[in-house]
Image 1 (spheres, one colour):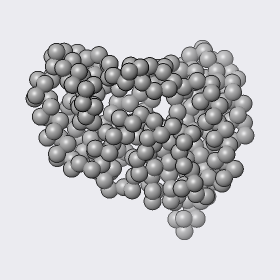
Image 2: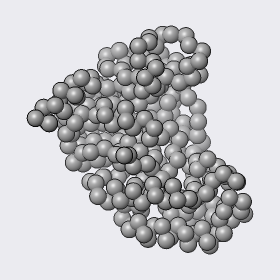
Image 3: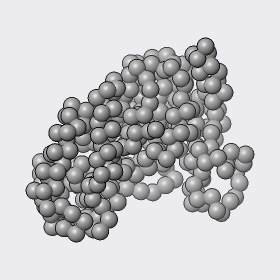
Image 4: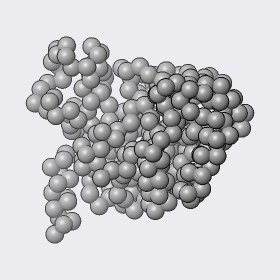
Length: 296
């Protein structure tokens, strides 16, 4: 049913799309995927205009390449690179040579091929913005599943009115969204650790400052009569985001794992590794009523 990103992006929301997509207001004309990442959410939304933004400019450049290039040409170019570098699940030298060439040329196509053979398909850079993910020996490769996902993904990028941008979330121009528009945020999570928020990929990390700025931005979006939906976690491996929990009391909280639906976030369940939530400035009941009116 849903289009899956060809990138195995850390923190991707593909498995939660049923819960997330169904929560969005129906019939909205403008949708913003402010932290697009692998773009699993933005690519599956129905709206007149979809803005997909991410501060990682090479990621947006890759999507621009997918958007403007016919799928058959993309597939052919990928296979040419695989042949040129003799890439397979054992050839570490070929992978390292491709990585070296990418860090010199910064080709979007090279970046995608790198992710296919990288360890766990991860995108990771050092502080000099040099791609440094090690080889995924005996594990990673370009395969038919990735190819099928890529074809569907690139087709949707061309068919939908998707406007790509690369800027810090604080610099995005929300004036073009307008009243009734939807802003979806899936930022790095403050209480988790990972390659996406450790500050070691050539761009800024995610700290208390960024977290506070985002929550204040969402308050302003609420005051501007726009809708917002924030993906985040209240609880993760013994850590609780107390600031987020307190802030969310002004809004509607939906537990994306249904087993937490009837429990308090103050509980002490040692078996609960992660409590993922969607915080919105509207209720699902309101959106269901809105959908019924549209259906009529």
